[in-house]
Length: 169
Image (cartoon, rainbow, N blue to C red):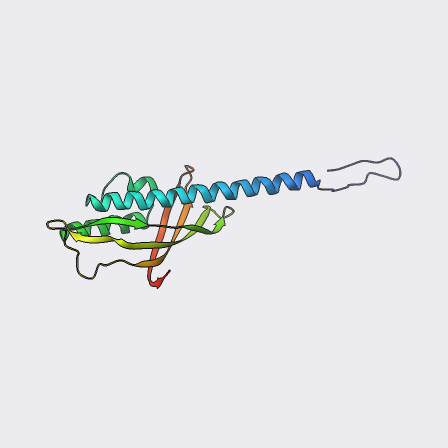
């Protein structure tokens, strides 16, 4: 803010007000919370859409593209198609307990990193014909990570994800 004073000449005084700083901090905190919430909703939607598409052996289920973006979208579709071609599908319950571990709303595009402890003990790959469990497909509890990305249309989509089956949780 520039201020002129009487006397020997104009003086520039730059005094950020605490009100302006508080407002900027509040806006930033609100934006971070909104990003976290949107990313966790996208992640939850991704898990639900993936389970539903896997249960139906439908790699082109439209709900997948509501929550996923490439390269993860293609990986999930290929996984579902591969199971279908081998006469298998996923069934059961997948439990999730995600947490946000990083938010970067300054990057272009903005991203949110998510860490999850997936419990796949009740989630199995079974043969469609007789519901027998596919050997070697047993699940356990393991760490998973995902990246949510904000796209130009404002949607948050899960664009990357990795199951760390060698890291129990």
